Image 1: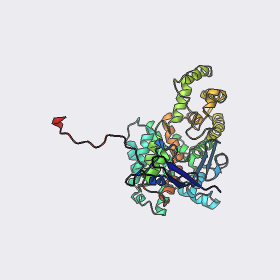
Image 2 (image 1 turned 90 degrees about the vertical axis):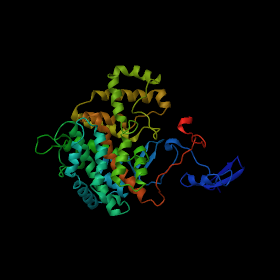
Image 3 (image 1 turned 120 degrees about the horizontal axis):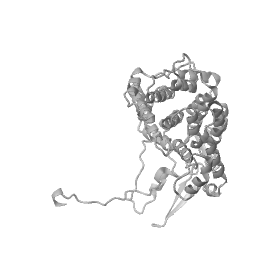
Image 4 (image 1 turned 120 degrees about the vertical axis):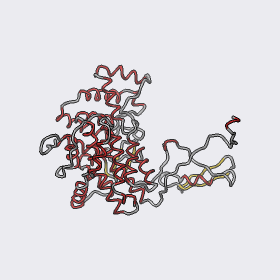
Amino acid sequence: MAKDTLTITDNRTGKSYELPIEHDTINAMELRQIKVKETDFGLMSYDPAFKNTAATKSSITYIDGGKGILRYRGYPIEQLAEQSTFLEVAYLLIFGELPTKDEYAAWEYDITHHTFLHENIKTLVQAFRYDAHPMGMFISTVAALSTFYPEARNVDDADVRMYQIKRLIAKVPTIAAFSYRHNRGLPYVYPDNELSYTGNFLSMLFKMSEPKYQVEPALERALDVLFILHADHEQNCSTTTMRAIGSSKADPYSALAGAAAALYGPLHGGANEAVLRMLREIGDVKNIPEYIKRIKAGEFRLMGFGHRVYKNYDPRARIIKKVADDVFQITGRNPLLDIALELEKIALEDEYFVSRKLYPNVDFYSGIIYQAMGLPVEMYPVLFAIGRTVGWLAQWQELVTDPEQRIARPRQVYVGAGERQYVPIDQR
């Protein structure tokens, strides 16, 4: 009978080692027993960018990139996007189960009544330059929240943790909206607790002189779906950052600010902005064939296609494509959509792209939707961060309650100089 073990023979010594296999992985520390002599440090694995290294066991998000599957706590993303709300998905990610009607009512009430910010926070946002990037303001303001809730440092207290989780989910839309209004020189709009989570966010963004902001249901639902789709995506760059900072027992505000900073990078949260720039550069459907030729010649990449994890059609892209139709019925058809649809059609049929498994990802259509809603490209990573806050917090909570976790400390392979003797400066 086959055993769940891996036998390694070290050809340097002729010794063999039997390592246990669990969940299709071996424990990296098992490699340390493989040595040439007893004084050796032991064997390590070398894996730049963690392309094939699992740093945690998680029950939050499941991805099968080859089959195009994404599930939160076992629930297919397609079902959640169609039938659930963002706050219900937030509850699911944090607690592991969908809420009952009473549990959801209590959760929604708690989130709704934490949406206001301390007035000093408003003063902080006002101190930024008029043209400060919204993501820079967002990151700084989230980090500053730790000074308003010093008890948050007690991360081992479950009740304290839950207070901060609710506060962050509630307050990040308010911070995001303040940064948007600041850029436009507009007065900040306070939360309206009679509106839904996304309805309130739209009100804080766009309300002017009207006594009550009238939320367009199709746009409210579209934003809710986009938040759901961005809520979590396993151990990506920003989530790994959240966990790494959290492993030092830092408060969740500081950890989340670090995660948001990682998301700020153009290879992560700024990808949909790159898609929009590409579509604008193409300009017209008739220019697509020439653009495709230039991509094949290696002049640049096809933005919004391909993914580190998915080697199939990103399931989130299918959902967003449907959401786009609902949004354009309200806002009017975005001319960039015709370019996007034709580009997708060609890419899915062209052997060059098919052989490389370059399918549309979540970023391909999201930027077009945000633009149609009247949001500038600078806000795109901030919108991403609102949805992802829930996933970051779920991952952080899982980390701090996991007895196997320790402070993050990757090893390195030293390739520098050997021991050298110091030479006084007048002898060099």
